[in-house]
Every structure is written in structure tokens, then in C-alpha cells.
Length: 130
Image 1 (cartoon, rainbow, N blue to C red):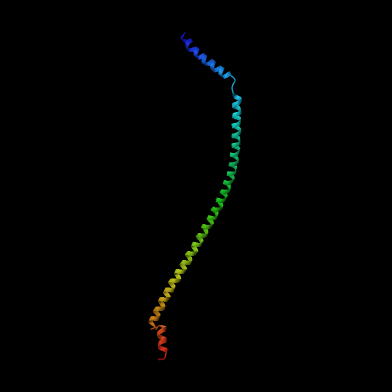
Image 2 (cartoon, rainbow, N blue to C red):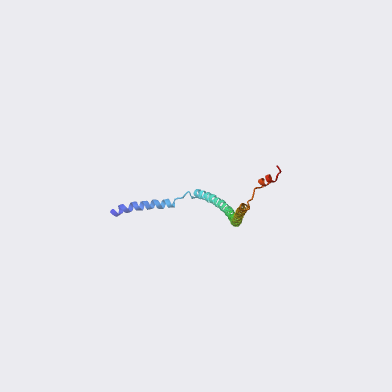
């Protein structure tokens, strides 16, 4: 008896489930909805794929442009290095020239001091008749 009390509700639920599963469904309406969604998603997928292809082409162009800019940058670095070297060489020559000129001026002043050299203004005054 106890078994019948448990078994009867289980059989009733199973029978309801079977009847529900065998009942005519509203599938055609759902199929149309699903078909419309699938069509919409396919269109969106195609659009996204086209955009992806276009973006891939843009990325490739930008990568090529970056390579060109990097090459130009490297060329400019090399030019800067060579011109900096030239500038340093000219600066060294200029410093040597200045040092040589200072030495020559010092030698000329020392020679003038030993010769009892008079400035040009005093010589002109001495030579003019009074």
C-alpha cells in the first residue's frame, strides 16, 4: 500500500510529461523568429567580416608607414651624429686658433716692451713741426 502511494504520483507526473511532450507545439512561429534572428545575425557577421578586412588593410598600411618613419628617424640620427662630430672638430680648431692668437699677441707685447716701442700717436706728435 505504501508503495502505491508513492508510485501513483510519480506515474501521474510522468503521464503529464509525456502528454505535454506529445502535444502540438507552436514551433512554426518560433522557427520564423529563429530564422529571422539567424538571418539578421548572418548579415551582421558579414558586415563585421568586411569591416575586419578593411581594418586589416589599414593596419598593414600603418605598419608600412611606421617602418618608413623609423627608417627616416634612423637616417636623421646618423646625420645628427655626423654633424655633431663636424661641429666638435670645428670647435676644436677654433679653440686652437684662439689659443695661438693669444700666444702671438703675448709675444708681440713682450717684443714691443723690449724695443721701447712708442704708440703711433706719440710718434706723430714728435714728428710734427712746432
